[in-house]
Every structure is written in structure tokens, then in C-alpha cells.
Length: 331
Image (cartoon, rainbow, N blue to C red; front, side, top):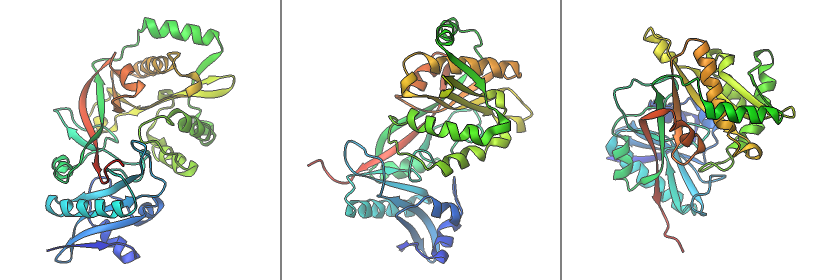
């Protein structure tokens, strides 16, 4: 028989973390994520499923209060029971919709990999067991958002449209430079405000604390090549950036061909001028000069501008889904 148990004490959280899964965290990281509750599905003393719940400071969905389910892992039968319990708990807190899997917000791990193909995983790509989509749909969840990764068959370094746009922007005072590694902490600090402004209209957006933002990028600094991180500036202030890095999993397979474009951001004040297309063109040129031959445009939301830009160059090869379940009917 499955028992649903709350994890509050340090010992209980250790049991919570004992169930390993994609993105499994340690107790310190779990605590920093600031969840409102942690729950486990236990059978015969063994943790078979786990999740954390957020209902404070969560994103708004369809103009109503949203609850979030994250730190998720587990076997199908136990996870189904746990998800039902999680939804009941969120409903008690006045949440109209449950969203998951999402570790509190979209700056952290979220989404389910729902469509694979023969391409191998790429560096920092989220993964999960193949039964996760069925676990969520079986528990009454439906898709609320779709995300895609696309791959180019080459690096299109010639782009007459982007060249024309860049000529016009540069004449108006815009500039593009690579990341200054000698002052990287100051660079990241400047990009923090730009990222908040650039993503403020994204689906399920919530702000992130400066320290957590800096920590996420500092964690991958040893993997980057500064030529692949480009910053656009206007009147001395950053107004856009593209963050790309090598596919290190490919390097393990004795190759060095592909970059991963992780982030493409443009400040709202500079939006609509083609700066995003220019940044992508420029990073393609930089990658080609370093010997790379293709690019992955990673984890794009179906309605984001980056998806429209990518569609001109890449072909979708992976799909991911974020799920939601209605807890309260609209009044």
C-alpha cells in the first residue's frame, strides 16, 4: 500500500533525495529552491515517488493563481497517486491550475522530453524516463506549452538580410562584442538586468534572484568559449546577447562539430529591429571561424521570437512538453 508522507525534517528530506532521477538535487539545493512543501509516496518503507510544491510567488496562468509541481521523480504507479495528492494540496491553497514538472520557475529545470529521434542527447539537455508523458496525462494533465530543439545542417555564415540589418543598426550606434572573461563577474552582473527585462513577457515568467542567476552561469563558465557569447550594446548599455557553448557530449564521441545556442535575448526597447537575427548570424560566423559546422537551437518555446528566427535555418528534432491540470473551474 502506498503512503503519502510529508518531508520536513532533515532526515525526511534525505529520504526525499534518496530517490534519484533526472535533475536529482541535494538537500542544500532543494532548500534554496524555496518550495512550500515536499511530499513522498512510500511503499514498505521505500520512497517510490517524490515531488515539491510551490504556491507562493508562482507565475500566473490564464489570470488565475497557479500551483507548481517540481523535483519530480518516481515509478508510474506511485507517481500517479502522488500527483493526485499534490493537486489536492494545491487546490487547498486556492490554486486554479497545477503546472509541472517545474522546479519552482522556468529558470530552473522544467518540461518533459516527449519526442525523441535518432539524434543523441546534447550537453545540458533535460532528459527523463520515457513513461513520464503517460504518467502526467494519466493523472489528468494536458499540454499547456510545447518546446522544441532544432538543428542546422550547416552554419549559415552568409545572411544578406542580417547583414543589411546589422549595417543599419551599427550606423545608429549599436555594437556587438564577445564576453570579456577577465571581468566575467561584472559582465554577468550586467546581463542579469538585461535577462530579466528580455524574458519578462515570456510564458510563465517570474523573476530570479541575482545570486541564483549568477550561479547558473558561473556553473558553466569552464565550458564556454568567449567568442561564442556575444553582447550587443547601445550607448554603453547591453541591449541583447546570445549565449552559446560547445556540445561537450559530442566531444566525448571524438567530434567537435556543434555549438548549442542556449539563450538569445533582446531588451524590449531594442525589440523589433532584427537584433536577434543579427546576434544569431554573428555567433554562427564566430563558431565557423572556430571550426564548428552546425548548431543546435535549444529548448525554444513554440511562440517565442527565437523559434521564428530558428525556423529559417534549423529543423526540429526534439520536442518537450509542460503539463497543466485544472483544479478549479473558472468562476
